Length: 83
Length: 544
Image 1: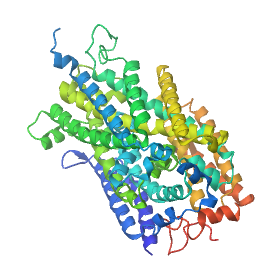
Image 2: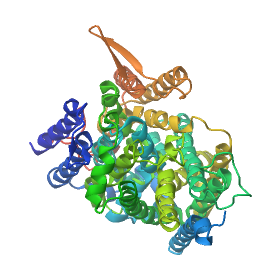
Image 3: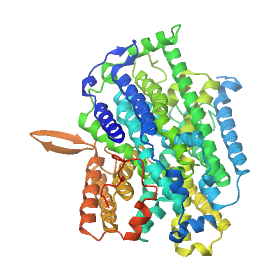
Image 4: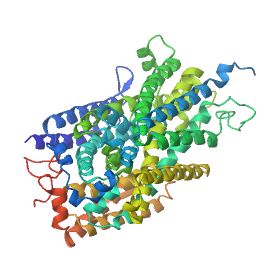
């Protein structure tokens, strides 16, 4: 369920990225920030929040252990690298 | 015309000082060199979260991030942020999370240094390296050229007037400046020296330092230019005054095609296939080192791009002085504003910041190409057991010198459309994204399917590149008719789709990979048991 929620939100963020609603809006927020630019800056911030949630909720478990569980018989590259 | 020493040579002295500082940093990093190939190429997998963040960000933010973003905003307005920056904030982190962590884990487990090693093993094909090698190198070279040429342009613009008689030109914006060929040469030599001696550790250190430099100085440039153009008492008043003088078409995306904007989303997927990022991912100390880059990358992009886009649109405002006239080349807008709106000290520092952004990408690309040449071609075919560890380091260094020399020589030829080539390079890498994704998540990906994907990418890319007048037509788009309407799409959408379809169809119609390979890359103990999981199941698309 956690995975589904995160990937659903990522897809949602990609949909929100196509902001047709501010396409021709030249409003200056706070008197200096074009609303279309502010919207996409918020998208960047939302992306950071979403990826923070992703590492909290769906961080792949056991990757470090798997990375160190080497099988030398399968692996000539490793031998060469360690020479 | 008498000018003070500081005014005449200020920028030049600061730029020279900055380049010397970088050399010292690279040489300091080389003192920690352990003498092994793994240390030279992968910093012995010792890079922690902060250095990984800075080196990944510094590497992905090329000359285009500072110079190109302001130039594009000057031409097309604020839409450039959504098209290139916010999309990258989502997609780059997605690639780090889905591709980077898994490749790091597989690389650690099986001792990979380059992408080609991984694909040779995963696809059970030695010859896949021969096919991928020219493609990866061919797509990286124009990317390198952009950096080398941009560095020459920046140095010439920023030092204009320093040598009015020695380096006089017809263009007042560059006359008397250190010529392009000399600026590019100095940049190449500095990067070469710290990469040559420092290897991946020197590159990571230099990237971290340079990323801090260009972020801090970028914000400083934003503040100073706003103050100079606005002339009011506070920053907020200046921002309001300058932005309100910008034409309406630059404050919106009214001149931008919605479908092109949408299909541009595919371009940042190129990060998943960049060979230099693969090598950076492998330097991570642990999987946990990826957490900070995944989260902070979109914020860092925002910190760099928002000020640059605003500076770009300000250059279209009525507050820009008529003299000296704005440069015709949009990529010279930022250096020009820095030069004309700030003093020599700040101008020199800001020039160093722009060079920092350029060099932090060049170093990784030089190192990566040197690694690919020595590792995947010479050592692989000559026989790894016949070349000692030190011999492999020497080979990598020789190839790095050769690549720097070739890139520099290529940069001396007229490169009218080289900046236009950037998006074509990214499109090529992005169209190979299905291959790396399937290699990690789809057990059924076969050798034939991979060949089909690569060959389709080359063929469709070449046809569209030809139709775009070899990249010279910047407005080239693939027009699609649907329901009586026509839609302009970025070429990457067509190439990506063709590559994806060819890979799936041919994989399903050909012999699947051996059980041994599937077990090696998708077994229970393999690192491919995380990231893209649905309800705790295997992350692979096809269940075993």
